[in-house]
View 1: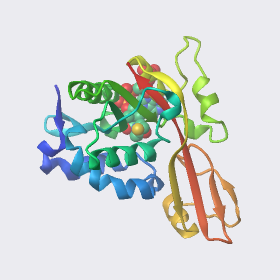
View 2: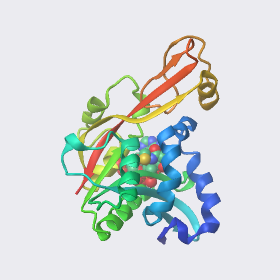
View 3: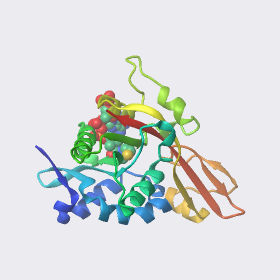
Length: 243
Ligand SMILES: CC(C)(COP(=O)(O)OP(=O)(O)OC[C@H]1O[C@@H](n2cnc3c(N)ncnc32)[C@H](O)[C@@H]1OP(=O)(O)O)[C@@H](O)C(=O)NCCC(=O)NCCS
């Protein structure tokens, strides 16, 4: 039996949760400057939107999101993950009224994968948002299969369908099964920069020349500039809207 709790209700499980979820992401994802600056504030401002799924007092899945204001027009969506973080923090600090909930991330512990728990996390977040009066629910989706196609633009990848018309991507499928529709690509969802040595440490690869590289679990290419000692990765995500 799965129980939904706010993470703040189980402080003793924080370490187990962070260990279970951290291994599910590539290391470079934790080095987005906007995210690093905003996350401590998000944790203070919106603890009610940080949920875990527990099974016998063990964290098997989790997800979180932020409230922001959006007029419902695709043209005025935030830039992506970073943009949504900045918008939510500034709306909170200006005491603005929010009308939209943005699902930022969800993860399932390796040992609990493939049982549909991710969909339960999304549904729990969405219910929580609606109960808080946030009538619109959006998500800058990071499709799990996209890293196998780093050269393909997101808009084209998102249009790839199986014979039954469902998406080729399991994470887009999960959102669509819950009634979400695609709004369009979020071209600059996250921006991650670092020295060449940082990128080598994060990826376990070497980058001997200035060039663009495919790295494990990136959705696009990483630009390495040896002369400037700089590596830059701009992640494109996919805006989806839930009913
Ligand atoms: C994405 C994630 C949350 C899905 O969790 P999950 O509970 O295992 O997923 P589900 O059981 O709901 O499976 C959803 C679909 O993905 C498929 N699937 C699950 N794991 C898969 C894998 N490793 N490879 C390919 N397909 C997979 C399932 O078969 C299912 O497909 P279906 O539509 O044909 O039924 C989980 O893989 C995860 O934590 N990944 C790392 C973090 C991440 O990328 N989060 C999403 C971006 S915020």
